[in-house]
Image (cartoon, rainbow, N blue to C red; front, side):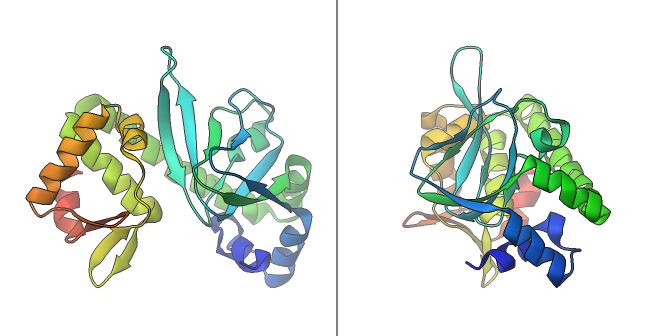
Length: 226
């Protein structure tokens, strides 16, 4: 994918004109990570913002027992690392590539200069941070108030929002994550994930096709479990 087109599609840069977009494309560099590669670790110094060119990454934290908690799974066009790049504090989570991935990296100093030249980037970034904060509030509510089935449904809805594609009225989630990753997102076990997904399939709420998960009636599923 052309870097200019990639940058233009990122929400925080959407208000930039073509000349400014080209300048952003020129200040970053491409980095490749193999499957399960560490992009950065929790508590590392935050020195860059990343945009995903291809592949997927997972944002993870480790609980007190050493277990992995997945906060989010991001794909092509998504960005991460914005918190540390703004406040200069250590990273709040670890980022791991789920498969072979290519990322576009903008160093902190260059990004801060960009904000100084184009203040509307900061406004767009605040808007995106607010959206993510609202979503995090929803995740916390789901994990604390819903039963296991409700938490699994919430994770599926989250993935549909993040990586789902609408086709003929259906929402298709391509390359559906492994059950262990889903369990780490929902705060439950692999067995519960498997049992709940099969329950949804029997009820006609979900369909599986290869590595993809299909929600044939997204509104019905969302209204049932949101």
